[in-house]
Length: 638
Picture 1 (cartoon, rainbow, N blue to C red):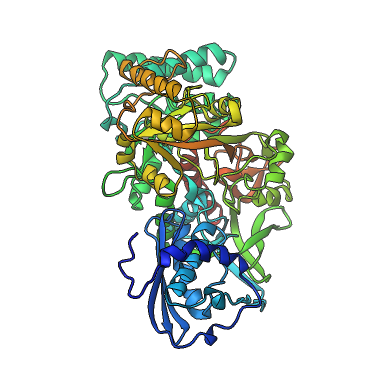
Picture 2 (picture 1 turned 180 degrees about the horizontal axis):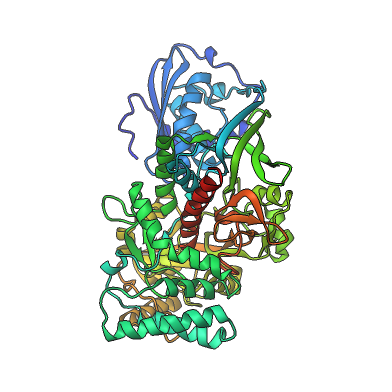
């Protein structure tokens, strides 16, 4: 970003690197800022954030910081934008650039502080003089008690969806969230939401016959002994035969979505939960529409026979990340609905009555105070345990040392609290790794790129797998490659159609080349082998046939220069296991009985996804089951 607002800036960018190093010295021993007198005016500095340049303008009066603004138009909504909102006020209030950053937005927070330091340098001042230690207010707040019809633990997608549903039923709702921001893992979702048989699918020309045939063949050859999959395959075969007689509209069905989900989960999913997920998915798209959340652009995604993932687009028609699009809108809707949101408040215990029914929660507030929420119903939407790597390795030791894509608060607390009052769990050892995690930062690279035509290239410059296979299969193949990494390759045509890819470029994730050979050199792979691979792949796209790996999802040739590649590897992404629930989202105990008053939705639950979650099913999961949990809790609390 150009510093168009800069009034007095001298070599701020040139000094940024030096200032960034000096920032490592934050803490005690700094001189008070008031010693630097005589300088007044507005001064601007810039530093690299998560999405691009972050610009900070400081207002100085006689050497003291009296005002601060920050701008970073490419920072992640709901994450980096929170730092942009909070830190400038803290800097202006304290006169220090050593304020605490937002824990969920470390990169943006650091960029703000680096840019502020650059602005001070531009003013001819020593930034070290403004690294004053800011002591936190250690005053403990009073213990408090809150009463509500429904208390929801976790302010991610499932929690806010449940809250909106419950408030629409006239219930008072309190959401307790351990983190300083809403969103959890949901805000990090990049792809979209799977929904079967929607009107938006009909806007696409059907060209996925091979995908349907492949799924039916897989069902017959690999799952002949699975009654659920066999029955679904029989129904889909009949539907497919009827469609072929009169191919009107786009072919999909609830049963095909169920079949894809069951096969993706290796047949160990709970069939009743899968049926609930899929049969309510199209209606969930409409419900989101009613709340100003539009997911109408349909595309391909890993593990799906047909185009089924519904994605948001911006005003220019370019796809955007679903989580950073949805979460701020869900939060806005919750605010309008009067949902009481208690952030920085960590639930520690589910309260029960003499009959074992859930009647509220206890939590710890930001200053250590005890917060008690008495409620008629409790809904757990705390997410899984993918950020608790000790817990991950407890259930799956072979994942020791893996990076994670999960948000900081995804620690398994909800599961443990429910277990403490007798809740049962299922599939706890089923932990998904995602094959496209940026190798240096652990940032999640959306599966949508592969759905839109990207390919994966190994260290030898060759493809090695059907890129839109299920995540477990693609991840396993990637781990088996030299160095256990690969390169995700796109072309300029894909970049032009996607603000998501443009964001990856701005964040510095990509290498590039004007020819395949140039890109191969930048990737460090055999240039001739890579060029041959790409030319061969373009021929497969034209023929709609991949004889090497059997890929059936094709978009366009990757033949528009320049070309880009992102180095990716596998990382812990989703925990399929969790609390055992029924189709009404009621949590079950170890005897299979309902725990009265306790409901759960989203990644805190198990059984929906089996051994492997399909991309796009997480957003469907938290929307569908979040709505059910909100309605069920409301009915129970009546």
